Length: 134
Image (cartoon, rainbow, N blue to C red; front, side):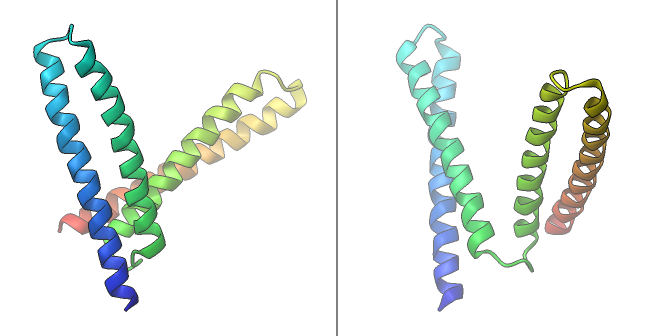
């Protein structure tokens, strides 16, 4: 039963994401033809936001209901880790200038370590993507 529910959730979220992408692409082409069309520009902005939300929802369903035996699960998991690690790295870089000199060194070392970890996650994600295609 759980597998059926999981598959239904994944399929429905994927269909929503695909429809948002198609609508965004159509509106973007319309805007490309007439850049002065403010209505098209607003619609593209709204659809871009909706597409981002649909992408996030789809990825959340994959992580919650997907199987770790599926390569797509790992692509999403590593993608989420990379996003979080990159965000944290940037926050640490921004904060380091406000720290006392003694703490700057430690935070800089932490940033380097985190960048190395993000690099490893990126490589693992690439391998998962290659496995999914093969």
